[in-house]
Length: 354
Ligand code: SF4
Image 1 (cartoon, helix red, strand yellow):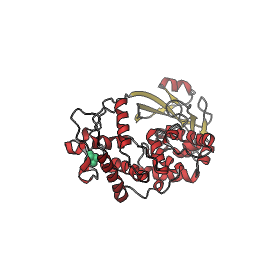
Image 2: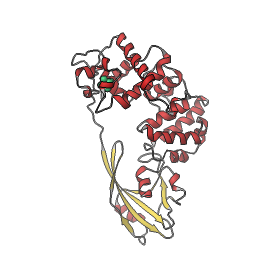
Image 3: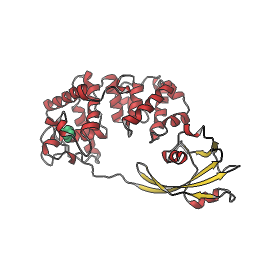
Image 4: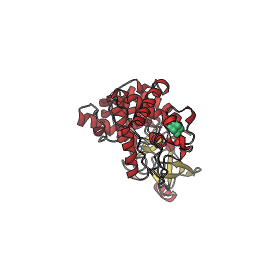
């Protein structure tokens, strides 16, 4: 967009270039962007918010079915707020990243209790609600209320960093703030263009300016794009710090009765799989063995890896068949008709279905 000097981390686009960029994105979105998705046919902040939360870390194709099921069960924010957490987590089951579902529920309760059942109209107040970050707040305000506020999720950071040739390290908070400022200066002058502009940026990031293979030849903002002009768009965005990962081994007691019932415990509200139903979890085989009656024989299965955002979990399933009685510790037998509807961690569901 604006030829930066090689060392420039914060280019300073001219107002004319900003205007041209926003116009191109809006025109392209209206003609070629994604359309017809159920959450695009509404300005209801409840529906837009629900879709934005579901779309974080989940593909559109997967979200479609969950979105329809959620709305059928919870048609408005009041219905969601009044539901038991277990039911919300159960409906979320399979989407992963359950903190989203817990925050969704808490957010609905705050909208009802603090805001009289109406979502706030401005991005700043939206941001005070559980699970709504700056970019999600901006998306809701732009889509529903034409607010002139910039979104900047991971995909949009990539698009704007390439277009502007933004060489600042986004792992540094100051640089990220600079990109936010730049993003804010790029929004259209006309508030009525905000929904198409916001959707257009999302569409560009998801379908054209992808991480590894940007389709520059067909990109609507190619004439304005610094990354393309320099010939190496994938050098943007710059992010040096990598996520710190840890690893943990856990043993899962898969206690099952011959009628198919499984023994499940509810996890604490903090930590891995918070608030979900789960097979009893132990930090060693010895701890698991000690918790189970010596009369019960145990069957170890092959361990497998489950990758969380910050952690690799090495899971060791240990089977035990119960004719009568119960494994030690708090828990409950769930028969085969009940456990599929519970909020279960993805690897536990896979084990039980397997
Ligand atoms: Fe991305 Fe290429 Fe378009 Fe620039 S021209 S925004 S690098 S797809």
